[in-house]
Length: 273
Ligand SMILES: CC(C)(COP(=O)(O)OP(=O)(O)OC[C@H]1O[C@@H](n2cnc3c(N)ncnc32)[C@H](O)[C@@H]1OP(=O)(O)O)[C@@H](O)C(=O)NCCC(=O)NCCS
Image (cartoon, rainbow, N blue to C red; front, side, top):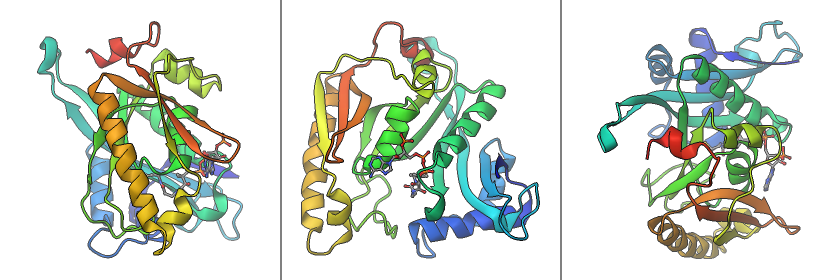
């Protein structure tokens, strides 16, 4: 059985650190240590674990050795300078990882759902995180399955990264905005994302994973990154946002962009724009 719950105690936090290293292959300079996980948890962040209680020797409550995924977030405050809106708390989700052998069976989504449930229970209505615009799988999860939107592009956000998933490319990131209680998110979670008015599409070729991973073809991945960077920046400057994401029969990913405030989406109201 898979159990999803808040991590407890130093050993479970250390298991998250180890899974972080296993997932991204970070060198010592990039690894977020156990102490930082502990502090995030104590100041209103979330360290949520997925435990496989059927592993040999695992307890029915889960324990450090049975950790097979985690989601980590930290608390933030949105400044209230615009339109006289009060400052409001939100969560920035910094890491989501599932062990390779357990991927593609809904666990990543379940960890996000537990983050959402816990945040709403505390009255928090927004969660944000960054993701690599070249990662088709993550875009599918974030935009299509969870109903996040995107209206911000950050060029080389983290600077140089030792992450093996980055393939040595600049760490460009999209910022996912997850309006936890919006009709749009509810509809996506129920499996029928709200239709949107599409004015632009940005394509990521399915081969991007191979290109990023091979020294010979990395230039091709970089070329896609640079071309798409310009397209996103241009579209966002025109007031468009990523509202949908589809995959074609060849596995290419397609970002769908449209005007930010579709009637009835509830986003405008939550965003206070
Ligand atoms: C991202 C991650 C946490 C997702 O976990 P997961 O348990 O595999 O996620 P889920 O099973 O809930 O959802 C994955 C979805 O992507 C789909 N998918 C898998 N490979 C894909 C691909 N190459 N292109 C498009 N979609 C893909 C799956 O089919 C599934 O969608 P479906 O439920 O509609 O079929 C996991 O892949 C991981 O740990 N990756 C490495 C770290 C990372 O990138 N973390 C996120 C950024 S911080």
